[in-house]
Length: 114
Length: 113
Image (cartoon, rainbow over all chains, first blue to last red; front, side, top):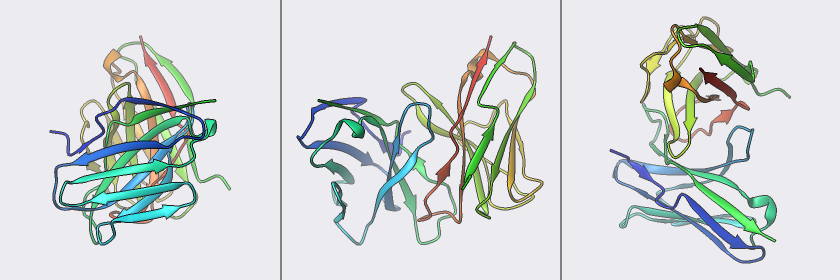
């Protein structure tokens, strides 16, 4: 049973518009969430994270929102750029130290069209 | 500024052959991981290690073995390769678990014919 779900395998957005990538989770013990970005032929790289004590975290054009009651988080990219075209993975963790590794979603492929 | 290095980058095996994938990290991280990425399946954890001399099973451990004899190295072995093991393999390391972010290598593309 998937504990972290990214239900949209792909998303296309025009350059300059907002990209919204969604992630749902089922395990109420998760309280730390991370987004990773992956380009073709490269390993994933960390993008942004959020703790459950917050409902929003911003880093430049990237903002992650967390809705604990709905067990839902989303990554907003504004404005979207062609260089943002990549696969985005949502991951979740238990805290504070965590005895188990991160759980990843299946990823969403974002295509930003110029 | 190497980070996590995986060798080889590409490999083609015949069914039944064996091979070892090597992962090396220079960040003095305690934790190391092996993932596989398949289309539509995301990143699935094969095995991981919480320190030198330790290993643990992940989500999809069957058909693989691992060893962590040195802190900086984590080896993934396939004793008898099968076509179902055709995949892209990623090694990662982290300082800890939970809130610690993972640093990934660039991957190994393995094809089993």
